[in-house]
Image (cartoon, rainbow over the protein chains, first blue to last red):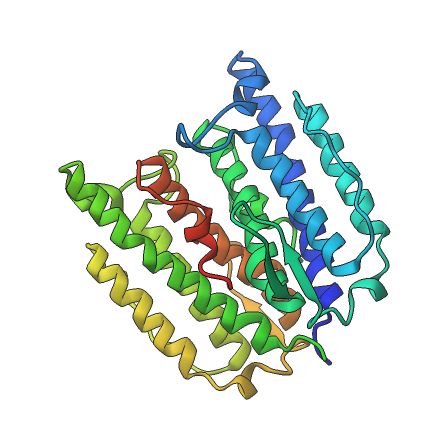
Length: 169
Length: 169
C-alpha cells in the first residue's frame, strides 16, 4: 500500500479549510463580547506590509482550488474576491470545498509526474505533480491558513492548537 | 507510481526545518540594524498566552523528530531545551536534521497502517501512520514553523513567502 496523490491532497485540503472556517464562530463571538465590529478582524494585519485577514482566507481558498484544478485538469470556479464579512468568507470556503469535493479521485491519482505550470510574478515555474503538492501547494495553503490563525490569536480570539489540527480520534 | 511514506514525510520535514533555519540570519541582521538584543526576538510572543519564539523552534524540531521516530521505530536523540541564542537554535535544528537524515527510507516506507501512539495531555491517541503524518504530524510542524515565521515578520524581520517556501525550481 502507498499514498495516492488524491489521498495526499484532497483530504488534507478539505480538513484544513474546514478547520479555518470553524474559527469564524469564535472570532465573531470575541468581537461581540468585546463590542467591536467583526470587520476589524477582517482588516487585521500582522505587519503593515502583510495582507489582511480577508485576503489570507481568499488566498487560502485559491491555493486549495488551484492545487486541485492543476493536478486534476478540472476547471475551477472563479471568485471575485468581494467578501466583506465572515458570512461572505464562510460562503467562499463552502464554494471552494464544493468544487474540491466534486473532483473525482481518478482525475488526481497518477499525477505524480504531471508537469504543473505555476504562474508567478516573475514568470511561470514548472514542477512535477508530487513536488508541486508537497513543496509548493500544501505549504502555501498552510502559510495562509496559519497566518489567519495567528491574526485571530494575536487579536485575542480564544483559539488553540486543537482548533488548528481539528478533531483527530 | 505513488507516493511513499518516506517521500511524503522526510523531504517535506527536512525542507521545512531548513527553511526555518535560513530565517535566523535575517533575524540577527535585523536586531543588529535596529540595535536590539537578538534575545528579544527569542522571547517574542504573538499573544501573552502563546509560547515564545525559542519554544516554537524547539517544538518544531521535536515534532519533526517524533514524526520520524514514531513512523520508523528508530530512537531519536533527546534534547534538553536549553537553547538561549540563535546559534543554539541553529545547532538544535542541525542535530534534528542529522537524526532525520540518518533514518533509512526502508524503515518508514510501508508504515501507512502502522499504529502510532501519540501522547497527549489528556491521554494518548492512536492513529494509523498515514493519518498521523497527514493530519497530525505535518500540520503540527507547519503550525510551529509558521508561528516562528509570523513572530519574526510581526517584529519587522524582512521575510517573505519565498523564504517560507524555499527555493523551488
